[in-house]
Length: 189
DNA sequence: CCGCTGATAATCT
DNA sequence: GATTATCAGCGGA
Image (cartoon, rainbow, N blue to C red; front, side):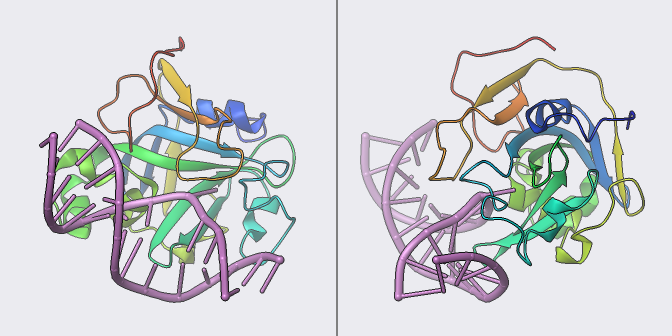
């Protein structure tokens, strides 16, 4: 990724990650949906300061913060932003690499459902807590830039605090989102 | 298409 | 002891 990419303000980073391609051991796709979280944000895991779980959020930008949610699923974040304790949740991918591998891990064949949610994409890519705190700049991860795309914004999903903040970003009109965005709010690339 | 519900356990208070 | 950045399956329109 370009110099300074991960240390731009976290809202800019969340939007900049849209269209980039993320793979793990060659399996993955184009990022089509993200959400931003930061230390001053009541909905963020980092809001109450460093803990054993959110340790990676206070570490260097460009690393992974991975946690388990509801005791069942894994969620992947890209640590970054211009101040400590911020990260971008990767919510959905458009599958492009290793479709067969994803189908085997997910136990389904529907391409649209392989990575259309934060827990789904971690299952499809084989992401677990073993990769928490790992850099995104080296194997098994690969994160590469993409073409700028028109984006949409809206409130984040599944939270109860700061629920009105429009800190969710997505590719306009994508069929691979975890859920549709409230219309109409397309923004140019 | 939409909304509801149970599963399931780490984390934090 | 309550909460949780979720998902699959179900039933109904």
